[in-house]
Length: 109
Length: 116
Image (cartoon, rainbow over the protein chains, first blue to last red):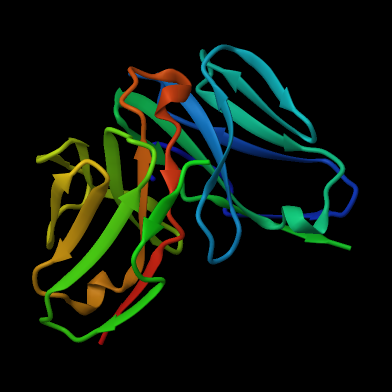
């Protein structure tokens, strides 16, 4: 996805914490979304941030810094079922979202 | 629960064929989208529609057209399929909204199209 950067792959251990970073363009910023996509399945909505700070939802949290054009998704107490791709997407006010290429997370026992 | 249904999970077509990919949503959403997803490139927007009979080009519209005759249905058309259109195609829908969580997009399961 143009102007959105996130790592291609990450590996982590079951029970650990992992942070997936995303940087985006700041002009026209209207909100930042995180989606989870298991192999062969539809992306599903995880979180939304528009103000600076941390949004917590169970084991998953998402952080935003508007001035830095930076977000991260934090996954705690990793489980094997968390192995998936995580997509960062920016709302720039044109109805459609702009997606990053996704980060493939592999959780190992 | 929002449901976005794509008519086929897997499709195999020959070069030059006309291909229709159908998408239906049951939540009365104004906005509907077609993306293609390729390894290393992420989701790229082909076309979107914000109302019946209205459409806008996305980032990669070449070789594609769309049709929105009814609010719940958005069709992607490949007029003459080519091998470089082999991809995963994802349909999504969202509320009209002016931003915020209104712009959450709900996705169908995808259609994996192979053009031989």
